[in-house]
Amino acid sequence: MLETSFLGVVDCFHESILAGQHALRIVFPNLNGAQAPVNVSAGLGGDLAARIDKFRRACGERVYADLARLNQMDLELLRRARAEVLRRFELVPDRLRKLRALEHRVQILRGATPAVEIEEEPLPAGQTRSIERPPIEPPALSTQLKRLVQAIPHLARMRQLFDANYYHGTLLHFITRGAFEGRQPHSLFDPVFYLRTYPDVKMNPLAHYLKYGAAQQRQPHPLFDAAFYLSRYPDVRAAGVNPLLHYIRDGASENRKPHPLFQPDYYFARCHEAWLSGINPLVYFLEQDAASPHPLFDCEAYRNAHPDAANPLIDYVLRGESRPADSPFEIMDVPANAARPEQQPFFESLRRDQLAANSRRVMPIHAD
Image (cartoon, rainbow, N blue to C red; front, side, top):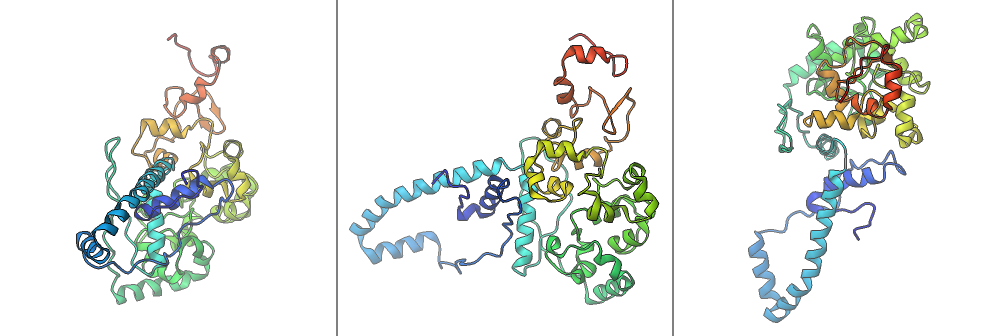
């Protein structure tokens, strides 16, 4: 039983789903556990003590004693299965954020009002917080109508970057509610990030980006640097197209870089399942967080230095630490600095004679 690829336990069901998806990600990279539950008990009635007493009286003391003895094996199997599920769940990168996202999608599929994602202060290392979220009160009908009227001139544009499968809902819902609840219409457009970065935006953030923001080289997501993309690829700049749409439609399949710290060929070499999946590599990285995206950014080393980080690269970018620093040279568009914790694994992998041979170009070598 413990060797089962997709082990499930009811009282930690969503943890079971995520652990199973993670275990099978190489063979089934598109496995989606966000399904509405079926065959769910409507409730057993009464508390546990009352149910046990009723059962005990119904079958008699002798039969009850035999059943209780036999049930110990089931309890031991359940205990071991629960422990194994939680052990596998601990192996899932960024597991708490993914757990919230899974529960959010299941709520939508069940027709329930999804929980709101609330920005929270980071917790000390080793601590976790409850994943409970208060329900969102739907906006007044007049507010929804106002938002819809404002968005009507932009509907054709918005459809270009609205992924109904990713959103698990309709464009109408996004216009009237979702955009203002921080829900993403596409994995590479983050309304919360966009509004926080550009406080002058007073309309639907997706509509603003598609009509104005792309031409102004504004960033739609922490890991898509429009200015970098257009500078690196003059053919895209000359064509005058929306850089994000170009990347989604053509650039990703052409192994173009969306951000200085995301090197597609390096990522594919480290994460073969991403290459096998055929999915946009940046999208795969955001969803699976399966490997480091650049030789000068080691995800594990960054997490060790910042245990509160969800996605390490997004956290790094949002902290402003990815801005160019003084350095004698660059590797794949990123300034090299052996003092930075996320870069240390790269420099530790080099022999000292290799570093010494390039010390004038790279940096001074100090004795330990």
